[in-house]
Image (cartoon, rainbow, N blue to C red):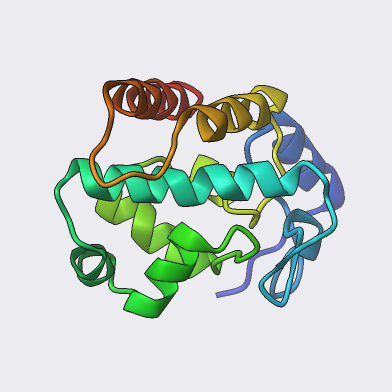
Length: 161
């Protein structure tokens, strides 16, 4: 089956939905600010990636899961789950982010933005991520403040979908 779309039709549809990405070829690299698992030099990227790792950590602990449980539920390697939670310079691939968002019931597009896989379109997401990262501290048990920070941040992510 062959599809035929003219340029005007594509532009009209691209303009009608701001949340969609239009790309040609195999992948749109302008939306991916990553290079070989390292931050792309965007000074605002690191706090988001830290927030991503903390969000994964706190969401996992809230469920009472071990790191092995998280890896099994999301079908990723245990070593990658550890890197996500503990290495702020590590940017997981889009597949991993998709698997984690599914396992932890978190919104995919926002998770891709937080993880450093997509450019952040909403400035407030970056601000909320920094605020969340500053308020959450890795400890064995979630403190009341961490639990509240986690709930507020997840609520914001779900509202911005």
